Amino acid sequence: MATYHLQTPFSEQDMRQLKIGDIVFFDGTLFGIRDLTQIYMFDQQHEPPVSLAGFPIIHTAPSLRKVGDKWEKICVGTTTSGRMDRFTPALIEKYGVRAVIGKGGQYQQSLDAMQKFGAVYLAIVGGAASLETEQIEEVEEVYWEHLHPEALYKFRVKDFGPLTVAMDSHGGHRYFEIKAEAERRLPGIYQKLGVA
Amino acid sequence: MGDFDYNIVQEAAKQLYIRALTNLPPDVRQALKRAYERETQPTAKEVFKAMFKAIDIADQKNTLVCQDTGLPIYIVKVGSDFAWNGAKIKKCLSEGAAAATLDFPFRGSSTHILTRLNPQNSVGRGLPVVYWDFVEGSDTLDILMIPKGSGSENMSTMKMFIPADGKNALKKFVLDTYIASGSNPCPPGIIGVGIGGTADLVMRLAKEAIARPVGQRSEDPEIAKMEEELEEAINATGIGPMGLGGDISTLAVHIEWAYTHITQNPVAVNTQCWPARRARATIHPDGKVEYGF
Image (cartoon, rainbow over all chains, first blue to last red; front, side, top):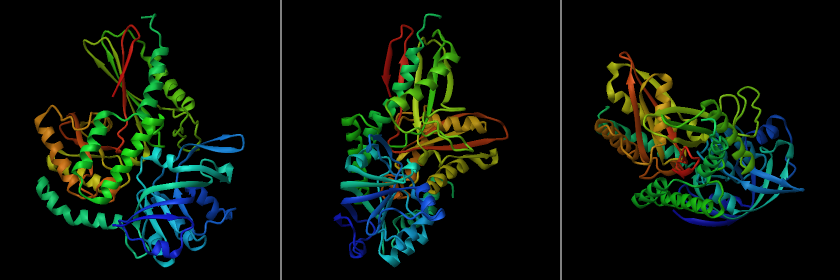
């Protein structure tokens, strides 16, 4: 397990060095998206007004407040990634996204895209929204404002993390491993519990 | 009876929602600390450290620990000697929850089931959820508030077993439910288990089980033993904090139970995420309010 402090934008090489179980912190730009943002991009075919190439995206459910023409953070936390799996391969292949940040992990098609193009899934600690919010220095832009709170958000972050590499570009999948290990242990657990 | 100022109840309902979201119960903090000390996996220890930082920031800035402010649930115990008007109390709970959402302000998570329109105030038809109970020999109104986020609530399960299935089927069901939930309910949390009653009562029992202080055992020795066995079994899975692997997969298993029908043995699981948010108020007849957990 290694710890990395990175800076955005991420290169393919930055991502290829990461292995599941490593811890990542980073500074720079982070884009926030979620369900509707991606339906708008992919199903309704709206091109993002900003390049995502080399940047990480986070599956977020932000609470922001607009004061004048400036957006202020109230509470930015992370939502479950499993719901958004079908969009991830295109985010990586077409738009050059290098890291997906969320909780709960994603599935095989996302893992395949990460392996092919050099990207990773970084697990954040769910429920720890106060920490995430603290690490966001500024909400720099809100694109597609009419979709708020499911718009496209550009955050500037400092020491963002800890993030655990849970899916890497070498086919490693922490959640699949943990599940397989739990299943391997299960007969013994059943036996001890007296339910075998 | 007519003299009682119901604004006190409304203000308490509002404060309870805010307190629950911003100030974690001391027993939950201690349980997380103990879990961290027992944990041996480095990644899992990092996860715990992030949780502690999040709690500290919420304390210092009086802000939300988690952005999912959930749906409000009030468990109300009315003393037999408390002069009250139930309909007015119910209205105060709803208005208090809405006021908390709008005034703090935080995200309203309630939505229409078909149109998905969000009134932005955390309430609506059927919400907040209110459970009523009545206590002999008490002159207070006791309100326990639980905000229930979706990561954990989405993992709720219930099954109607039959007597022939026996108690082992219940235990297996709880363990299997935990494994199927994986990282989604933000482990390590409290696994609330209901056993008995009817299909609806059993889930309410599971919900009341998550509200018990962490690790407080059932008063029934057989049930308490089952809680211990299930804790050990769940921790043996290795699923760990946030499902990323580790020794500590749950803070506690709590079981609440009721008698059931001769042909049934229902079981329900309702999981609470690691921040295990809750807040309590006791309202006295003179209007004095004591807050706690």
